[in-house]
Length: 181
Image (tube, rainbow, N blue to C red):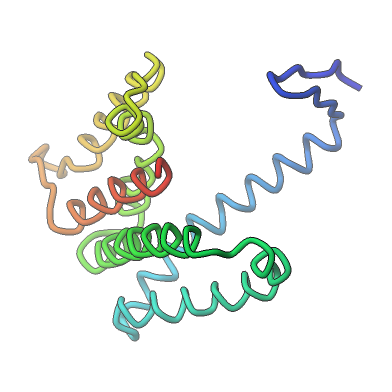
């Protein structure tokens, strides 16, 4: 068994089997997330993007409502409803742009560009909360910009950042705001 890992709020102990489970769960989540871009790219050939998103969100509301019904009854008030509606609308637009991007570019490019929201979060937080990003966030953002540049190069080294890529970037910006808010 490895030594305990100290965090600011509490002490966590872990062993190799727990670590393996968490790494496996993380890998599974990444596979599902990445695979969803391919599935949605195919699905939008048969179902309009807005309808697909409506169906996904209704299903999500039903599942979350069933699982957390007790907590919802205890904690739901007008403040939570208002803020939840704002975040839901922003999130909905983020998904509309992300899934709309799939009609114009590849699933891989869309997934890569949309996932850049992670590197944008410290900068959105700086904008909103006035908390300056750490140097590692700046380096990560530079690497993301370089990555976008590389995937935007054609075989003849011409730069192409079309409608799909722009929509994916807009979705990333929206998702960064959703996470900070």
